[in-house]
Image (tube, rainbow over all chains, first blue to last red; front, side, top):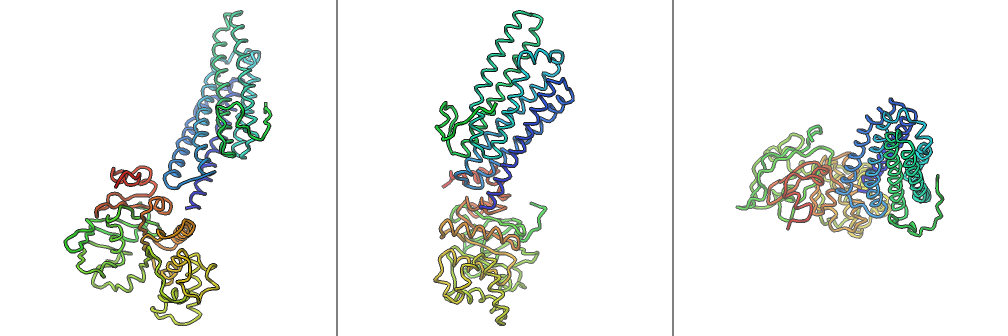
Amino acid sequence: MYHYLEEELDQLKTKVIKMGSLVEEQIDFAMRSLFESNFELAKIVIERDAKVDKYDIKIDKICQRIFALTQPVAVDLRLIMSALKINNDLERIGDIAVNIAERTEPLKDHIELLENMGLLEMAGKVKIIINKTIDSFVNNDHELALGIIRSDDVIDNMEKDIFYRLIAKMEKDPASINPCAHCITLLRHFERLADHATNIAEEVVFLVDAKIIKHRKDLGNLDVKPEEII
Amino acid sequence: MSIHSIKIEVSELNLFYGKIQALKNISIGIESNKITALIGPSGCGKSTFLRTLNRMNDLINDVKITGKVLIDGKDIYSKKTDVVDLRRNVGMVFQKSNPFPKSVFDNVAYGPRINGIHKKEWLDDIVETSLKRAAIWDEVKDRLSDNAAGLSGGQQQRVCIARALAVNPGLILMDEPASALDPISTSKIEELIFTLKKEITIVIVTHNMQQAARVSDNTAYFLNGEMVEYGTTRKIFTEPKDERTQNYITGKFG
C-alpha cells in the first residue's frame, strides 16, 4: 500500500531526526558538564540515555515492520537501510555522551589542564561535526555530508597532537598522570564521535546519491568538491 | 484485537463436501472496518471459508455445514435468514472480473433496480456515488452507456466493485480480486480496498502474501482446512507463533 509505505517512511525519518536532535543535545550537555564541572547536566545526560535507547529500539522495529509488510525499492529502500545504520551510530554517540559526562567528577579540578592540552578546542569542533551531521541527514545534503567526512582528518590529527602533548606532560609532571590518563580516554571518545559522524555522513551520501563511499579515499568520485567544515 | 467491534463471529465451523472435510472447527472473530486477509496454499480451505460467509456454498450439492456464523450478531444459517438479503449485505468480488454484458451504468444499477429503485435521478445518483467510491468514476463517466466488457481488466474489476457497493453492503468478500491484473491496476485496487475500509468490512482471499502484508490489518493462515494462526498482520509477518505459518510466509513450504 503506497500510502501506508509513505506514512511509515515519514514516521521513520521523523524518529531518526528526533533521535538525532536528542543525541546532539546529549553531546552538548556532556561537553558542558565536563568543561563547566556541572554535575546537574552530567546527571541529566546519564539518566536520559534510556530515552536514546528507546529510540534505538523503536527505529529498529519500524524498519523491521516496513521490510516485512512492504517491498521497498530504490530511494525508499535506501532510506530504511541508512536509517538502520544511522540509528546504530546515534545510539553509540549517545553512549559516548554518557562516558564523557562520567568524567566530570574525576576531572572537576583539572579544567585548566583540559583547556591547555587542547581538549576544549577539540570538543568544540566535534560538537560542530555532530551538529552538521544531523543537519545533513535532515536536509538530504550530500555536499555537507562529504564536508563532514573530509573533516575527520582534522580531528584525527588533533587527536595525535593532543596525545603526544599529554604524554609529554605526564613525563614532565608525574603528579598529572591521573588526570592525563582520563584525558587520553576522553581524547579517544572525541575521536570516536567524529568517526560515528563520518559513518552517518556516508549513509547520507548513500541515501541521496545511491553511492557507497565508505572505505574509499576518493569519496566515490562524486561531482562535488567538499570543503572541511571545521 | 478485542478493543474493536466484531462484525463476523464464526464458531466451531465445519464444512464437508460429501465425505471430505474442507473446514475443520474454525473459530474466528472478524473485526468491523478492518481488512482481514485469508492466506494459505491452494486447497487449504480459505476460499471455501470465504464462501460460507454469504452462503455461496449453498449452491453446491452435498455440502454439510455445522457450527455458527454470526454477522452483526445474526445467525446467517438460521432458517429465518433470507439469503437474498444476506447477499445484499455481504457483497462479493471474484478473481476474474465478471461484468454483465450490459452498459457500465446498467451493471452498477442492476442491484438497486432489483431492489425496486427505478427513479432515474436516484439511479443516476447511486451509479455516480458507487463508481466514485470504487475510484473509477473519472475513467468511465463519459462512457456510462458503453458495454462494460470493453473496459480494461482493472477497470472491469473496479466496476464490479462499484456494482457490489451500489446496494450498500456492510461487508465485501474478495476472492483474489487482483490476481489477474497488472501491477498498476493491482495497486489501484489495493488503494481502493484501503479507502473502502473506512465504510465497510473487507475479507480478502489472496495467494499473494505481499498483497496480504500490504493491505490487511489482520491475517488468518489456513492449512488443510484448519485455521493455523490468526492475528494482526504486523504480528503474523514479523513474529508468527506457529512454525507452519513461519514456513509458509517465508516461502519454505510447498
